[in-house]
Image (cartoon, rainbow, N blue to C red; front, side, top):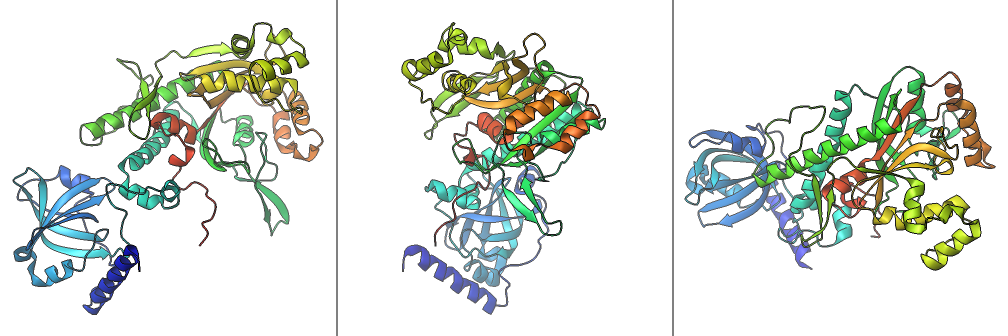
Length: 510
């Protein structure tokens, strides 16, 4: 029998012993003064307070015991002595283990070392842990185990817990940002008869009562635009999309998107809005870090302001596993904006767009050592050059504007050059963070674009969306931001799995 199994056997024996004493090991409610952070805030010598949490450390001093009690908000030390709690509770105490949940009532005092402590008068077992926690200082060393057993990762890894606290703050503050600017949060269907708004492989399911196949949505866009037709001039949604495609450092089949649409705006105003949003969120995240360094969370939310003020550049540090800074991203405004064709010329040669299709393929293959598949269209060859030589090498924020219309079938054509569309693609740290459009609202042009995109699969055309456009959609600007990638950017996470609580994994073979 290995050590872990021996510990599990011992804990089960303690479970049986508790029940033999008439004590329920998985008890009921326990009234507390507040969270452990709130207990620490209310701490005053001689005061009686009540707290509950998980036992995470135990220092046995013979007749007296010091324990750490922890919840999601922090830790407090508790002190148990036989003379204070009596023989019956001491017998119960001996049946406790690290990882158990208990509720305590005690008197506040400060130890000789200056530690705020609760001297326990009574305690109650709230839940028995039948398995031991990972060793505190090493946590979960197996990376896959961190994702598969995220609950253990959150218990033992303070950095991981901080990342998800920041993700929660990012979503909360994103809602606040848009609501303060008059946007309405809405919900649109996840189950759809036509998966539209992007070119991606959907997940398929079947509705028995209606006898129809349905798809998990791949984008939020087309239903939100219907709301513009309906007269809702500022709308946003934060919700899940699903794509039945590969898994990588930057891709999970289930992911969270923000999309926002603003009637009578254009892509330039949406770029301004995006820049303002991300700087606003970065300031909130930096404020959380500062609060941690000072020993606590902000007591009250920061006041809502239209434009955040900064006295120094916003810098996001990305570190390696040893804590060494590997790159610093400067978010100080204004951010650079450049046209797609100009950026390609900078890296591929000023004559790039004067070359023949074959010459472009040769240069990409021979000079830039890129793999160019034979089936790629000419615009896709250029896009491949852009992704490898511009996008992947761009660290500080860059708005790439005026892209070829073939890349963005739902955007409005540029008035001066109908081969381009009025869009931006925001790149930070080698990845696309957000696209933004002047939205196409001509139903005839939109139909033609969707037909070109669908090719022979005409059944993929969303006729209901086109019908809505024929009733008239106002000119509008739109943006889409992946919340997962945005969290990676603002927390320095290197994998999307580090910012999704339960990423999709291959089932574990038992």
